[in-house]
Image 1 (cartoon, rainbow, N blue to C red):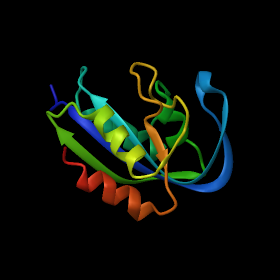
Image 2 (tube, helix red, strand yellow):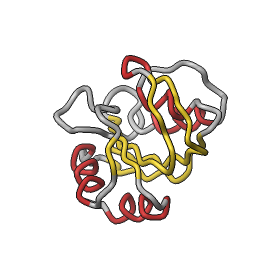
Image 3 (cartoon, helix red, strand yellow):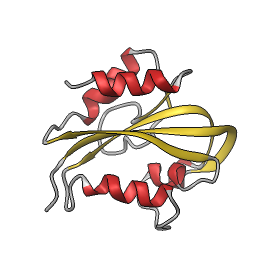
Image 4 (tube, rainbow, N blue to C red):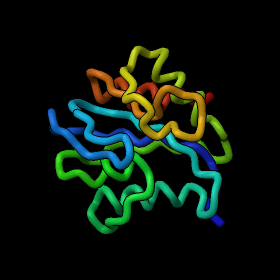
Length: 136
């Protein structure tokens, strides 16, 4: 089994664009986004490889909200940060909120009390900086 942990995906969007996101419906995207996730189930952090494959067009099956964003033609996966053996998904979401990033309501947060696990900022480097510095 692969190592388990938490991760952050920085996704660039050539917006504005509207994308249908499963049960959340159509959402408007514009700008860089950071998605925080956890990989404590089967496969562990190999889930990040699955996200890369989906973003690159090598996969089509969508399971999670982030899959809809990653598979859109107008988005591309940028920086990926992993936090092996650290269950800090919600703490990372809090770090993005505290840094002034805007939440995409309920995105990826259906199994916790966070307002979102997808955050937008004006500068992509800001998202990467928050992700890199959040070694909680």
